[in-house]
Each structure stands twice: as structure tokens, then as C-alpha cells.
Length: 76
Image (cartoon, rainbow, N blue to C red; front, side):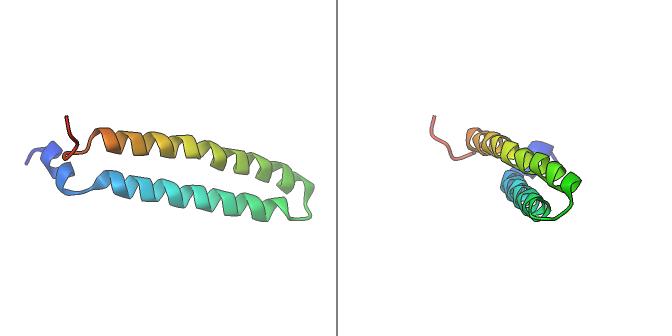
């Protein structure tokens, strides 16, 4: 079986987008819990985790654009 046809049947880009959204949500929640803690080093690390989660929005945007460009039903 051709892998290209196999991946067209499985909408893997949709699963990838959902996975990226869940990762962003996880890192945002983890960063917010750390930011409101009493430990100073944890507050500093959590700021970096929050910035990382915000940066992952660009990765999500790229994944959405890739899925739009590789759609089968798009008009030429």
C-alpha cells in the first residue's frame, strides 16, 4: 500500500493539530501553576515555560497552514 494513500485515509494532520493544542494547553497550565507558587526558582522557570507555550502557537499556525495546503478537496 502506498503511504501517501494511507495517510490520506487517516486524517493525521487533524490529529497532529489536536495534539499540538493539547501540548500548548498543558504547558500553559503547568506554567501558571508554577508562576503562582512560593518558590522563587520555580517562578523563574515557569515564565520560560509560559513563553515556550506562547511560541508553540506559531508551530500550531504552521501545522494548520500545512494541512490547508495538502487538502485533497482544495480548488486549483
